[in-house]
Length: 304
Image (cartoon, rainbow, N blue to C red; front, side, top):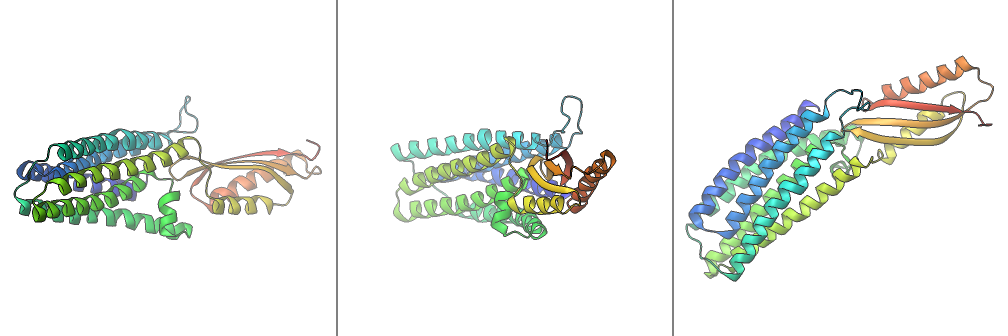
């Protein structure tokens, strides 16, 4: 993993741990259901960052006899565990507290404490979000993509998770703030309880989206069409290449692409010329992109 990804996760971990402690204290002081839901949200985010650091640590292990392609996809496994396990736990707690509060409404107190903690939390979450946005924008410029396209297409599950978590955290702060304010204004705990339910639903939505993307990469998602077009153009331009019969570009891990090509070569080429052609394709593709880490070219003749 590049240093920028590690920095993004570490910043998010420090921010979320601080926010979680503050929100737990505020939930105890105020008795607000929405604050309790946001505390669970922050705890879930903190646990998620720990698992994302583990994902980074495990995914950079070198290839061995049992795993000849390396451990890159381990990043998606641990990110999947984080999105399903930790986020769902936070969502279940928030939904349970919200529903219980709807059925058995409890008044909150010390509204000023809730406002202050939510405002500070939103500021801290924004700091972490800015770091994730900065990394995603840098990568988007590198690949000549729109920012939102990069959020969806990035092969780095850690920066995607941090961005989604921080955006959801700020949205949760706003929902909780509205719920607490309406509780104070109306004297009814119902808006507070509804806010907790909405926060739980928000966590579920983020969890499902992150889990889906990690599943896609675990199953061997192909590189984006723009990358495939560049590879296809490079291979087809080599003298001796008649046609490309099959081309697959699969992620072996974050920023690690494996190119597999079955190439129809000129039947008139000698054995040494075919070998030279395969080497040229390999060297050219690796030089074009630092993310192409393995190239396997299978030459076939027309008769084959």
